Length: 201
Ligand code: VGL
Ligand code: ZN
Image 1: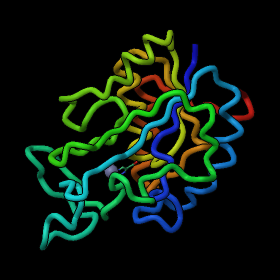
Image 2 (image 1 turned 30 degrees about the vertical axis):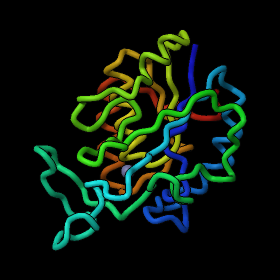
Image 3 (image 1 turned 120 degrees about the vertical axis):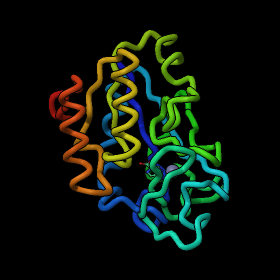
Image 4 (image 1 turned 180 degrees about the vertical axis):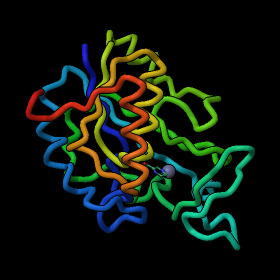
């Protein structure tokens, strides 16, 4: 069976949020319309402690969106976002949540970022999402949400590596950077993801 993964549809990634993805709100009606097409809907939630080391605020002298080395991994320095318990970390009130059966949180370890819903960026710790999906009999995942060039992209890459068939619902995603998104699509296509049009579902 096929599961729909709703990646990080949280206030901080939407207009007015601290790391707003351009036009991110445009996906909300599409995501809501999509959900009834799937037997299983699962969400991920970026869920950072206040002093997360991916926040530029934790690195005085380093600019927002610049890159540093964080324990051996390249790390983009983001604005504070999706801090546990804050309104910015909540799912959008415009997201229909009644069909979401499980929520996988990520980004809790302050020392490492976690773009993918499956693993942290160092691939050291699993969230359990892949085993959960396999346990539910899922062979194929369709991804939507925010941001197309970060958390949706890295979740899709890990899903491929975990041997799921992967479809990227491009119309129900929006990217932080156009160039990053082009590169993401190139890599995903090369690794066997398909780009599914909502009209064909
Ligand atoms: C994300 C940057 C930092 C995302 C999360 O959900 O795409 N991007 N944390
Ligand atoms: Zn984050």
